Structure formats: C-alpha cells, structure tokens
Length: 214
Ligand code: DX5
Ligand code: ZN
Image (cartoon, rainbow, N blue to C red; front, side, top):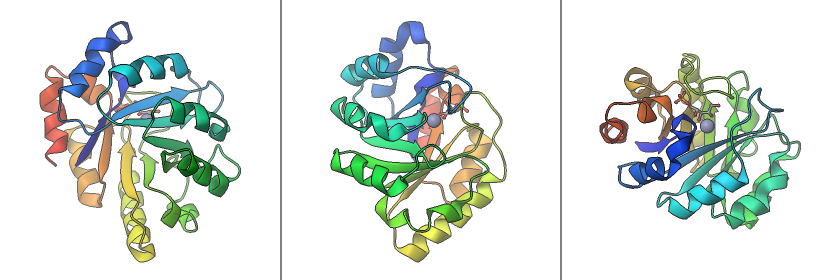
C-alpha cells in the first residue's frame, strides 16, 4: 500500500522535524492539504509553507488543493516541485483543460471527489489522469470519522478503471485508522492518506509501516 502522511496533523511549530520523520519512514509520499477558506470552511497553509517543506522533503509531494479554481496555481506548484496536483472536480469548471495543463507543467494530474460526488462523473476523464483521490470525509478538517459509503465508491471506481484500461491509482483520504485502512485496502485502494493516525501516534514510524504493509 502506498502511504501518504498528511502534514495537516503535524506540529506546525516543528515542521522541520516532522518532515524529517517522514523522510526517515517508509512513507511513499508527503500529502499537503491546501485550503482557501472558500471551497472549504477552513484555511490551512499556502505557497510559503509548501516551498519550505519542499526543500526538506525527500518524498514526492502529493498536493491536495481544496481551493476554488485550483487551475490558477498550476505553474506555481510545478515550480515548487510538486509531483501530484490534486484538483477537486467540484472546484474547476473545465476539468479536461485543467488536467492537460497539470501534465504540460510536468506534474501528475489527480482528480478529487467529495463524498457526495459520484464516481460516474469520471467516465470521460479517467484515462487522462494518474490518480483519483476519494474523500472519505468532507474536506476541510483532519480528525473526522471515515464515511463507510466510500468503500462502495472505491469498488465502483476500481470497476471503472478496469473497464476503461486506465492506469489511475485510487487514493483515499480522511478518517484512516487500522480498521478503515484494511477496509479500504480490501475494497481496492492503492494509496492511503493518514494525518491524525500518523502524527498523533505514539510511534509514527510504526504507524506508517503498518499501512505500508497492507
Ligand atoms: C481533509 C484533508 C485530509 C486530512 C486527513 O480535508 O484532505 O488530508 O488531513 O486527516 P485525518 O487522517 O486526520 O482524517
Ligand atoms: Zn487531503
């Protein structure tokens, strides 16, 4: 299983040591949650923080934009060295154009769905993208409970990917713990985002290793 610890749950006064912990762990990517106070009812961090983190991180950056019109940030994110740029389907008007722009900028395009957004909306874009991020909580906050309906969405998305011949990965974000991670893995997830579970664990390295081993 691909594991992407979410920095949202880290100690922001000690980001340097938090990012180094992830560097030294079995984590595959570092997940960065950008919120604009408009698309979601919260504000997290933006480019100055991403730039500082990018200098220290040895893991590929998986940037999740919870912002209106995320396409406007494509060039700036690419310049900071982001690997994945996740845009919400609910926040961008011309998804195909946005996906092409992300790839043209040298990043890997990923499309994110809120819990109530159906997987079927991806039918005509699934072969153009490298990943689908399924939100298993409503975006905006860490530490929420996993929404069980997500498991059926993972299965439906797995079927769509297989039927289309797409190589898109399935990433699941929100409320991941030992139980929900195993359920998501069984349903067909390729990657898990874990914030609270990792950064508030007594032993973050062991926690990351647990998800990595699924
Ligand atoms: C929520 C973010 C998540 C969040 C997950 O809007 O997209 O990445 O950090 O946090 P946990 O793992 O605590 O649910
Ligand atoms: Zn996220």
